[in-house]
Amino acid sequence: MHYAIISEDVANSLALRKTARADHLARLETLREQGRLLLAGPHPAIDAEDPGEAGFTGSLVVAEFPSLEQAQAWADADPYIAAGVYARVVVKPFKKVLP
Image (cartoon, rainbow, N blue to C red):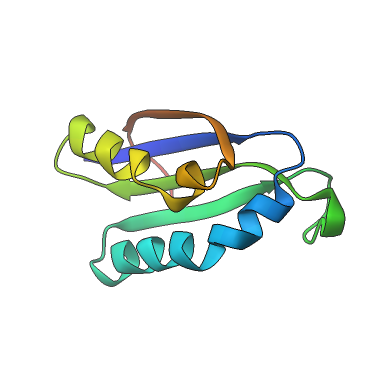
């Protein structure tokens, strides 16, 4: 089943994001290589493709996991959590309808 991992950043998280970005992306790349990643990306803090120094307010990952518990465990191990980027993370089942 797919699960949505919805993360909200702490204020002014850009510098923290930069310290853990490579490790964060490596975990996502592993999911992609396994064919389990539906989509992933950050929420820009402003209405722009590249928000520059405005940074980001959070992230969304939708991926396949065997259970909610395993999705939660994967989310809890995110390098962005260890780096202090995320203030809050919610994991919930996701049903893809379109496209």
